[in-house]
Image 1 (cartoon, helix red, strand yellow):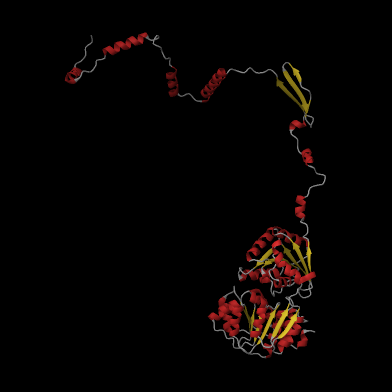
Image 2 (cartoon, helix red, strand yellow):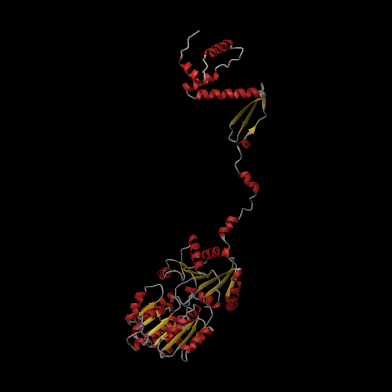
Length: 514
């Protein structure tokens, strides 16, 4: 069967030809005819089976059959990336028909989106949160809407969008066609389906199973060895592009930096990054500029990326459905891929349900040996600790070949040769030196110090005078009798001062010599 069998509009056929669509996938083959009949569709299929085309193609065809003004279709998506992907497909398929669309998502210019809603477009593709924000500011006209699509509905429930979705649905016309597509069908989604759909046609294509084109492998590795395991696996496998899934936003950033340090060109994408950064990272990954991208589960749902060779679950997903979605990023459209999960002891409680669900398709293997570590840790078999000593450079004394010492006239002569053949003669004096007495040693040391100071310092007149004063001879009483007599005579001649008035008068009377 081909798309020509659906008898689609000529402009839509041209769009299908442009994107290379010739044969519909199973979900498209069963959904498109029922949607063209105006029936509600409940599509349950594994990821990567072409669910986007299953609702975009009939919507464009029905708008072309019954053209009118105003917004005709509303498509709700859980993530910005999926919304952008849907809008890109609408643009490509509706290019020749003139179908217009607008994406209303967070992280982009709010006023530009508001202008697009005021101007009116045929199809609105939105995330629930940003559309609610626009509805608070604008009085959006939903009266002409004929089609409502809830894409990846189970993911919207997981992200807590159910209240916003119900609020938006209350603003829509009751008479409409509703299509709900999901990879899994939890109980909450079944309740929502009953409240918003009328006698839906249920189409199931291998619900909650992984593709047979995906080679699923699991390796047990402690957390500290997971980074090295990723590096070794990428060295061993033949791949062109790889997605590494992390459980947290912080872990995504840390893993991206660690891979870059290892020389692996990697990017990242998660909810905390701006929309501009997310779009740039995804575009670089799609065009092959960045071969590895580290992401949270924001990239696990519905994103259509061609030729993803390998996906690596650095952290084991907490739910079986998340594992199925992650594996669905590879092995798409009859292409083969590899899905690898790294499991630590703490991850075993999450890994056991996955193992039970997948069964024998999941292979548990051993990690490849780390060539780098083995080279560092390995030692040659013949190498012994003693070999290192033999190979080491010996000191010069050990290299000498000494002859027997010869005593000549109280002197010892030793003749030796080194390895180079050089002759070395050593002469030692055997006569012991007399040990000086302590007093003589002190005197010698003092004299040497004084002599050194006198030689080094320049002569100074003032210091020389002081030295002369210090070096003058100190006389004893026996050696100076003349000096004592002179001092006595001088003392007798000195007049003692008198007291009172008479002393004052006496001081003015000159003293005559005797």
